[in-house]
Image (cartoon, rainbow, N blue to C red; front, side, top):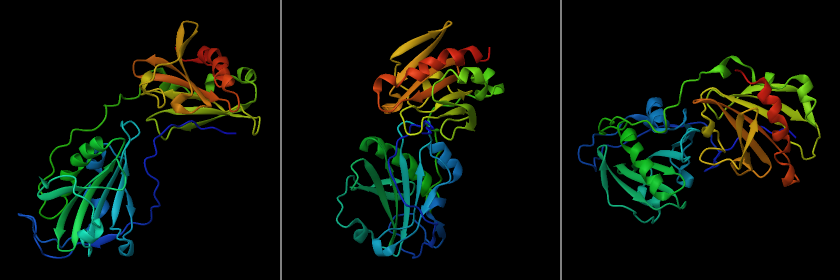
Length: 333
């Protein structure tokens, strides 16, 4: 059974369809200083790619089509970057031809009106306990909302308030967007000896043969979740039995404590291989069948070995421990 190890936090599962561009009509000005709203606006266009990046979310956004029968305005969804903690989902919606009172359907205000970006924003209760959503009326039958969902309501509201002035700047009558302090740490540039080495060379054919139920041929790929990282995967050969694939990961810009599943977690033990000290993580990332080991190469680069076993908790780290001396012997430098 093939295992490509990735740990992530899923905050929302949504069916996304093609985007919808809508015209914001009407000339009412319920907010002082607001001009007529006549411009065609796509909900995803309420944040520029640069704003999305600085706020800590992935581009492009995912547009969701308007459905007035279900009182669903056009909206756009962004998920936070992999290196942002905590993970979050950002939702920006823009409604036209829809009454906000009918849409809110008796939802209770959770805040007093707040003047942000040239508009009056009010937080209303949501069905999701940690979902913080602010609404602003744009016209008689038009409104905009900004919502964030993450681990706690307070954090969700904090993140939503960072987004509001950025989105408001794209609405007629909105004030210019203030500068954004980028979210998350500044990632180091990839460097060190891992840049010039193929992770599939970390096991020679005769070494792979020492690992029970592991294929002799490794397959290299680039990570979709860890910036600049690549890995080599040697698949398992025992079908539906317990052994999992053996993986060697190179992180040329990943400090040893920054691997998903190991970040903020202390290893359960240290494995000394010829003076090189690997940190061992059984149940890595909370996955009972997964074991990982990490080793610093430089201050800003590291190696990770991952495997696992299903059906016997006592064997979860066996193959990782067996493979560490083999991999260590082939490490650059």
